[in-house]
Image 1: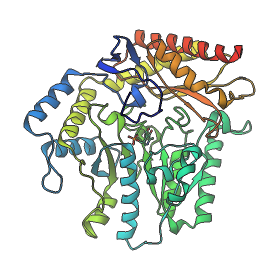
Image 2: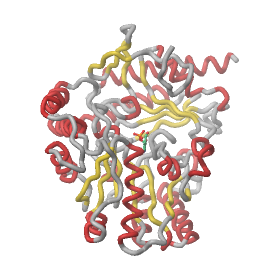
Image 3: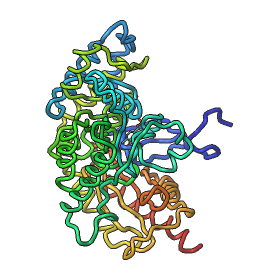
Image 4: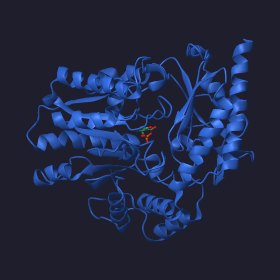
Length: 445
Ligand SMILES: Cc1ncc(COP(=O)(O)O)c(C=O)c1O
């Protein structure tokens, strides 16, 4: 009997006891390839000696000091490091303890920015359908997953949603990727016009959509148009790079590949690679300045923000990524993974699409390739794939509701940046077996 309220009550979870490199071992001695980095968290793999050494040294000095009394070298150095490598104009960092907290802080920073400027009528956030920004009430409100929002709807702040970029299903046959992106940008423009541009605080989007759609990048030009629209109305652009940021797509920030710089960026997950719970919000100078020249206090704090041990672990992770030139490995291995996935699933009867960017790739499962018909959600194909993969010693990150929040299944892969070609080959082979086994159960039914 467990006293932990697990994610799924009644489900038996293997007990993870150790990890090394791309593998996690359970209490029965079975090894799993961490092909999803948990939930796109692990970037250096497990038990990296340099990160452990830095953490041990910090622990021997000081684990934690409350930020109302002190700053720490760890927090200062990490903030310097993040700002030095951030997109143009970013000058300050707020530390929190995870992705949802980062989104909450970004939303409040955006609102406070306008309060400081006297634009207190701005209170609406626009975001996109089929997005995930976290589980706390503010993050849930801007997120676009109907089933997750439904029970809590009466508690949520006002947010409006426009279409995501989802080329596989939503680009019309008569559109090019560019004209499709134009249509979506126009939809955003129309939404803002309907709400009144002077009432909107921010537009929030995942630069590459992660868990909800399964590694879906934008079409060329889309984010540049979004940036222009936000600028035109004085609306802040918040890019949520909690999942896709910090090297996952082959550049440190996913937005580097879009040629834009947002007003606020949220990061977490791969930021520390799982060595400590941490998240952060990076802000443009103008946001810092409005608060510094105004009330002088960002009205938002947490007990564990800027935790010294978490900052040290994170700094160590970021330094190893640079020292070992791991983003080059992300790009090289991404090409190998894409090639292998396309060879294995490019003509598979139950795989409609193979997509992604960097070591952030996914396959979308369909019951009919030609019509893109998804499987009946009652069959819970994504859960079957996950358990078949676990049985084969493979961690992947499948999700349902890909199409509209209810229908559709995909499997997300996000292996650590240290991965090599032979491991990727094993991942694709085991994933293939898991999908065959899971779909065979359905065909027999
Ligand atoms: C894009 C995105 N934003 C925010 C979050 C929330 O992060 P956390 O689970 O650390 O609260 C997630 C988590 O999956 C995410 O993928």
